[in-house]
Every structure is written in structure tokens, then in C-alpha cells.
Image (cartoon, rainbow, N blue to C red; front, side, top):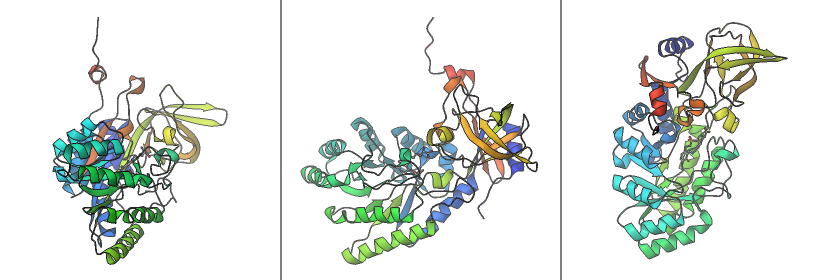
Length: 404
Ligand code: LLP
């Protein structure tokens, strides 16, 4: 059974550090990583944690301490990774639609780069020729992912170089002497169907023989974790088996060995995170029981942005009768976290916990309505430690230039 934080631990943390607060469980992150390593141990696989899911530097340090690498989606994430102690060769920057100047900055840092446009690829080839190995982000034209907003590999997606433009990539390679080491795809987030990964690797393997210096197939992230009870995540051991099968067939046929990289975000940190809020107001309107909490879409935007489900528990009154509640935030918008959700009887002052809050929770938080971002706490060896303090008024004004 995977490790979880107990309601008692969460109540104690809420009391000690106040609410709203994000809580992360280090050992759970380690467990997720071990699952991946085990499932893919028959092939030469490496994992680059997609840090966009959660970038607190203490989380990055933990990720490094367990031997995992890191994937970044901006130059600043790459800089954070280096500050956290990763060596440049442990850092991958999978970019999309960035300026060439940012690519040059990534070269300065000495990290791996996946380039996603023909125009940047050409500039890269002209400037660096064969001197700096590079990856190509391709768009495989595969529709996959939990919803359209998080589907990135389909044929109308902005991401990557359309796979039908491979000929143009080869032309640039020929003209500039580019050293193409990696072929990358990322088809989307929350992909349950293992066959999507198998199909992805097939698309890439078909192209490999055009790239004599290719060493790595990068399949991106997207493993699904369960959010609702009864929901199933990606069958990770099966994914390991299927990818290994595809790779073995290729190796036998072509006598070429390849490494496989993955960039898991949600899989690594989603279930390791809890978001604790406190009920500020109960309001009845007709049949609707509103439970208003001291948070809103400014702190956890996933339910409003993607219609995502987050399991909610009342950890202050766990044994009591369940009633339907509509859980809402305090932002001046309709920020509904859950509608008519069965939750143990709620009283004002109770703590409500949102589960699966580790990935894209704090990371997508904002100061909308000039509210403070929540604090973050990391529990390691059963010891909770504050890893980000709550904002203050000074933080809100810090970057403003106040004129008289
Ligand atoms: N690699 C690349 C190139 C990506 O674009 C992403 C996610 C990942 C890896 C990691 O995907 P994951 O393993 O986390 O599914 N904010 C959305 C998810 C956006 C994902 C963006 N790209 C959400 O909260 O559902």
C-alpha cells in the first residue's frame, strides 16, 4: 500500500502552520519514482521529473537525492534545478515557442535541450553546427490525455514539429551539420491507455534510421494517477513491458541500442500533495449547502480550469453523517471546487483537505484578488518543515514601483 499522511498529521500541520497550506510527503514521491524504475528496469531508461508540476527548491532537492533527473519548461526552471544542485547533464529543457536567445542561454548552462520549431532548429544548426547535441520535439499527431486543454500531441496542437515535417528537419541537419541525439514526443497529461505510449514509441522508432547519431527516444510525461476513488491510473508495469517489447523488436531488427527517457510530472508528485483549507462560512440556499473556505481559484485552479476532480475530506469531523456540500472559494468569481459532494457534516472552522494536490496546485497559484499565496510544508521522516512561508503585504508590493 502506498504511504499516506494521516488525518491526525494533517490536522497538526494545519494547527501549527495555519491554512491554507500545501503539504507534501517526501517518501511518497520516492515510492512513485521507485515504481517507475522497477517497471522499466529491463531497458536503459532514465526519468526526468517534469518540474513544472511543483518547483519548490526543497522538492527539487529531494528529487535529486533519490537519483531522479529533472525536466524544465522554462530557462528559470532550469536555473532553479541547477541551484538545487543538479548537474547540467541531469537537466533537460523541453521548450515550446521560446526565443532563440533563451535557447542560447540553455546552451550556456550546458543542459540538454529539446527544440520544438523548424525556425529555432535552423538557427541552432547555423550557430552551433555539430558542436552541441540536441533533441527534436516532434508532434506525433496522436490524440491522448484527460481533456483537450492537456492534450498536446494531436494534429491541431501548437506543440512540436509536426511529424510530417521530418523531411525538413533532415534538410536542416544536412545543411548545418546538426548533431541530433534525441527524438522527443509528449502526447498529453493523464494518459491511462498504455497503447498510447506504445504507439508513440512506434512513431519515433520509424524515424530513427534517418538519424545516424540518435541515442535517445524521449517519450515525455503523461502517466495518469487516480484522482477519484475507483478511478484507475496508468498500469505502469504494463507500460514498462510494452515499451520494452517495442524497443526489443526494433533492436533485433536494426541492431541499434537506444536509451529511453520519460518526463513524469503528475505521477511523481500529485498523490504526495495535500491542500488544507479551513471553512470560513456555511450558507444554505434552497437545497444547496455552501461550504466557503479560506481559499479559492487563486490557490487551486484545476477544478475551475479543467473541471478536475479533487477528493475532499473533512478532517475535523471524520466520523459524522455525510451530507451533500457545494464547496466554494472566497474569490470574487464563481470558484466552485465541488458541487453536491458527500462530505462528513461540516461546521465553520473545520479543516477540509483536497487530495492529489501535489501537481499543478501551488505551482499554478496566483495573487488574484491580492490574496496571499499559501504556505508549503514538506513532511520527511515524519517531520513537517515549512518550505515556503505564506506571502505578506510586503510581498504583494515587492515588484511594484510606487509613484507619488
Ligand atoms: N513533458 C512535457 C514536455 C510536458 O509538457 C509535460 C506537461 C510533462 C512532461 C509532464 O506531464 P505530466 O506527467 O505531469 O502529465 N496543468 C495541467 C497539466 C499540464 C501539463 C503540461 N505539460 C493540469 O493540472 O492538469
